[in-house]
Length: 252
Ligand code: PGA
Image 1 (cartoon, rainbow, N blue to C red):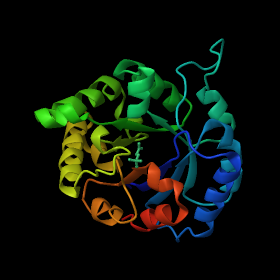
Image 2: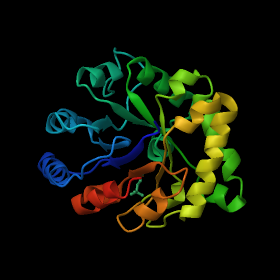
Image 3: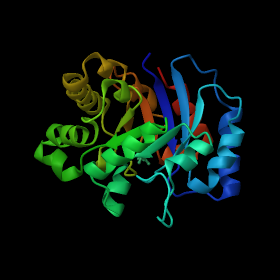
Image 4: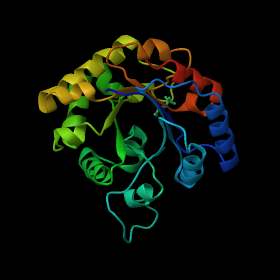
């Protein structure tokens, strides 16, 4: 069954005390989730264990890391391995966010390695893709994003694809308040599903494809109502409990 997912991406925000309060406020107001619905909180590394403890016993609610390294362990000062995440029972990891690509030089090949190790440790990658503004203006966004999928995902087996969530996040819509229209999101996400189905067949129909980029309480329902938009990866609006709860309530 294709999951409908509301994923909060807190990025590098909140003190521990603020993070605890935000999580408490969202969890206290969580609606009854339908069987196909999931809620994910991608929190900073130091808060993973706290967050994992707070969601204990909550069905269909998961904690994600915002990144991981390509190696199991070793002399890589400052990095965090999937083995560590697994030891905390973390279910998801965000990979390939545009901020990682832009500020930390992560390319499609490096991300393929991260995907491999996350899958090896049974941690679901939320794989982000999306085009910058100049590519959108040139009208070559379909090719650009397809290439991101081809170079990072096409070596996987069909079975592995089914363990991945994709997030389409046009860079010009991230943190800018400029949301893609539901038509733009649907067009691109249908395109991505067709790219996946050429390689992986029917499995593409079971892959959740989220939209990210200035999702808020006021536009979530319209975006999520599109047939190929299976929820959202939410930055700014996920830092406000009321907003994020409204977004969760907008899931199909
Ligand atoms: P935004 O961020 O909702 O603040 O635009 C989305 C993201 O970067 O995941």
